Image: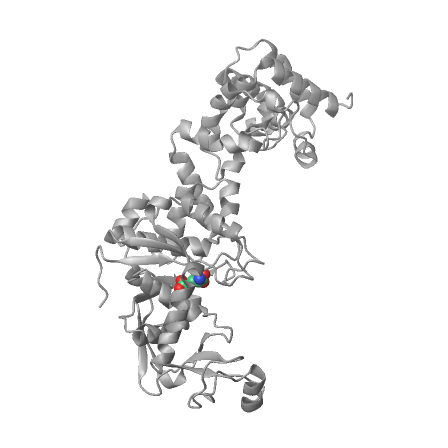
Length: 472
Ligand code: GLU
């Protein structure tokens, strides 16, 4: 029986071989939630022993992605490096050998293929009883029991029974002595006193082998929980080639960490009380790994985006403005730095806050106020500047020349112009919107004009009118 409580020790054990994926983010969040809920511990272990594939820069990526999710160094033990534990890996391998639980094997892959045909289906046990000692070209294999079965009691998937006879004598250490993943991972988990291994489904086939290793090394195995794969809208497993997976890319598009965290927690889990958008602490209070579904979880980008919009709207305005800052910074914003006016931005921000789903959306919404000329988009222009756009622009310019510069007044005047042309307000305001902002959609028009001011508004209307009538 799994025991829960402050003795719970879970770990996140990524290999630093690439960008930090959303699937890893979900795994670490679930581990963290289990640690928090039980007042236990989360360990971060970097499995960096595959020197050919590892890169130190990815270690920083893991640590900063975790910090972005709220899991900073105060939340976990470590990071421990697997490569610091090589002596213990070797010692465990040797112990298994001395105890007769492992044996040296001199078979090459070619030998195996020669014996088993070109369909290699696992080691055939040729060297099991040859009594070979260590030597060049000899790998160390685990002697799996001939009889009985290994029962993996997975907290997410239930019990799976593996017949020991069907588990091959897998390699523990290569001929050069280096210990492979299956054993190194177990030795580290023992060393770090891990009680619950919560990890990706792809490791499920490793669980019976690793459970045998725990037992052979004289330890009670941990509880296992293998999390389902993530799939895209076509029900395909998320893949680097097809899908955007890097957590960083979502951060850079303007997702808020809280929204992403909330969304990822729901990939295969839901609170028993129902509801979806809720503070992380509330999710933690309800989180049970046994409630996680074993079925593939749909990574629904549209939903994550909608969550983000909700989180953005819930921010106090000043925090929203602060969150926008990276997109407004001189190195990133499309306008000349000296044209940015914080007061103007402060006036537009509340209008934008209810309309953006991603922080990056802020730029096309407010750029009209800071660019010397509005952006020019042929398609929007062609659509908005159809007849009688030139006349409308002329009338609006005349009406706006004297009006009190207030959104409600600006609206009333434009309504009057619309009426005189027998047009709806929407139709009549389209050329004005494109003339002033360059776009067909955006912030509420009259509030935008009020912020931009009379002089600049009239200048843009006039310049658009001239273009439409072919004067420019
Ligand atoms: N280093 C392994 C990986 O990144 C994790 C192994 C585990 O969680 O047990 O897939």
